[in-house]
Image (cartoon, one colour):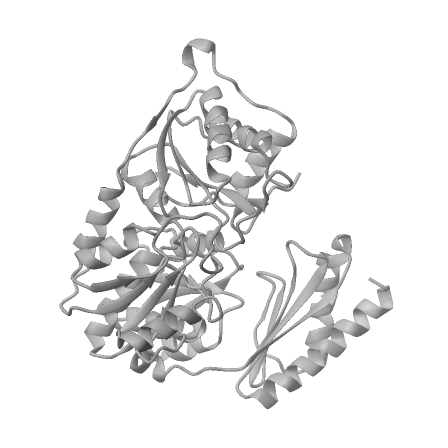
Length: 453
């Protein structure tokens, strides 16, 4: 029974994720964690309250007392899980997905998302219905609490801004609707807020912050002559940046630039990113004396490796950045404030900050493949690619197969949600990227064609 993906349990409401399943997950978490106290929070989605009621019912049935935080960003839930010393934290969110989706993400008492081992134990408890229900005398109870001020105070203690930045903030009607503007104002910024009202239908824009969904934010930044724009996803663990010119800051570029800044400031250190991130991360970090470690796509894997390697920073090219000195959960609001602090440190605007970061062309292609054949096909494709690209560099099987070749790299991964295999290519030039793509595509088509997969 496979419930968990790269970021918790997620699916269409009342199709994949039902109230019945949410109750079982709650009871399974209580059974597995044996936590006496559990925090629960949700984003602004309309289905959140329904799923919360079911989840809390399961947790209480297992003997856990539940403290409900209401609507707060995911990083707030993760931070408070550790700060308040409870046994577990559960966030109800589908992050950047459309409003018809929802999900459940579980955090341990140290504020880290459940790893694969813990996720599999939860799945086995549910699959075999090995629940442990509390005696009627020990059934848990719930209460509504508001402790988000602890998160606000921690950021205000950690971040110091000396300029009165004018920023336009777009929470997109998601969970950061109140905290993001308030925290930035508290740090001395002049804040213009857009879409800062909670609405789980996300009527203003998609909850995924990208160049298309933030086009209006970019326009407002330019019209107002602001110094930047900040766009968050549905649950606030991601942030996208608009520079002072009203241009969308490329995810890979700003990630690489900030990673290099952190390494330089620390006099070295390890940065963790995913196999999908641009080679621009190495190009920026290594000259500063830092090292780059790559792992599977998904913030759970990033945080896990960061802790293992004692990394100073980690992130993915989707705006999910992790700052271990504060928290091991991606945090959009914290990332916003720390980027502004970095711009002050270097006396640069955002456009100037990323100007020296190389931007390489990335190409993507999908290939149909039956679900039961995907994993095996990817392994065989990897062997074929090694033969096709003689004299290649590093070959990694951390997540799919990733091959470093002359003038670039290519990655072949099985989709976790669709019957397809994904090919991603990055080249030092468009010509190089197209050549790598052509060669990689030929290998994949030949192999899939032979097996009629």
